[in-house]
Length: 266
Length: 326
Image (cartoon, rainbow over all chains, first blue to last red; front, side):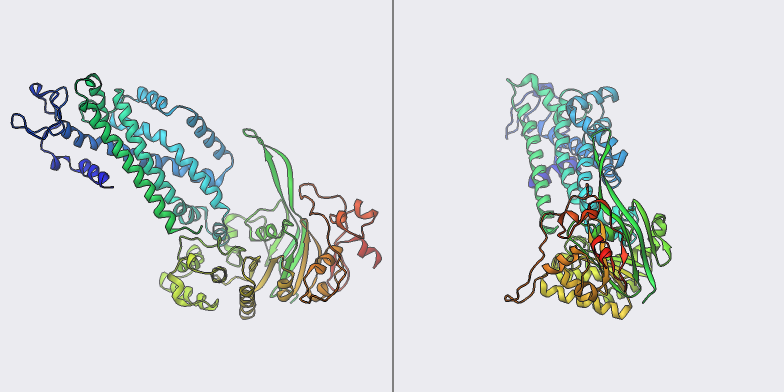
């Protein structure tokens, strides 16, 4: 939780936390190992990379991309998947079958290959990255929400609302959406984590965000030629990614538990 | 009392059984309700009894318009419900309501009691927000619950209390007809009596008409004016409560009556116990649907479906044995 707060702070206000410019290059100070003591008056706590850029600063600034891409992708896939899931589950019929078959086809496709193909078509940029990740993520929402709605629709309290004369929209908004909300939130949280990993992977492959912008995936990519000589260049961003994903997943888990406790009886 | 509030004629509901993943085709039908006809008079309580799976609840849902019938007529207060548009149904629903069996599933766990009981007002936009609150409190009192309960959530209540909340919701719009779908079968016996008494009191106060769907013959006897016995999607016997309980005509009804426990361990009875299971409604037996389990079945029962005939005094029965011999 604490880690997550720090990462979020980094993403919101990097300039407050760190004074060194993440893009400032200094060839004479390249590949310095992490050290607490200052060399030549400048302190690079986590060392520098092959161009002499401060790694700590790049990590802090890089959190922006990761959090932005992760959150935006999750929000966008909720926006695509949840309405489709609600419609499929509530109305059923042909539309339902068509949409679910599309979802099945997409699920059968390796997600990384799909993402690479889409980036190849759309071109690499931060915005396209978000779109690509959202396209990969809507299926989960649509499927899970559809399943929930299918069972909810037969619940007596939904039938009761129908018997009272509620319109479909009223039933969906008043009864179905609130009931599925915890699920949506939990899936979305895990998607943020997944999106961060995929973003890092795509950027590592050179298909993600621009290399000018500091990002965790980009740092890993830079580091691969220096694994033996400057191992910290790879291990530090790798550790940060792992920790962030882990803490988001833990947060998602506790969210789910909190909701379970609140409405434990049906 | 002869004023007909609800008229049902030849009501049929078949559920298709579909198979196939991409192209679906129908492989059969479940004949949940197969040719029901009955009237409900204003102010009376009609009991609808039968084994599980005989189509009682489906009948209730059909009348409420929650399911669309395959064919047949339902006339409520002079209005044809079957052909009605969704909008028209909305208006009719102010006039009839349903109380469900499971008080744990019929209340949304995420809504407070005030929201649940206020929902009908909100849906039909009948009164202002401030007034709505007053209406909710009044309803709470009418069903015997404390006013302070309105801000609580369903999980804080017992089964009986929840069922009272369900009754309050059904009453909110002042309907003429309330369908009670097994309103007490999920409750403890002691609480059952309370809820039944509540329903009876409300009926007297407001002149309500009930259709009481149940499998508990004791409860039905206690509350109903007339009782219809269902078997495999059809009504086999319909008569006033006293006539049905004292002199059941249909062999199925006779068997049901014999199965009512008598609170006397010494009482000896020769019971006409039913053997075998209810046949599948996908493939009902030919002729009289009860003939495979009937002790007095004759040749004709296997071949011809018996007609639903008046045996006099509003006592209807569908049985060859009864109509032929007397």
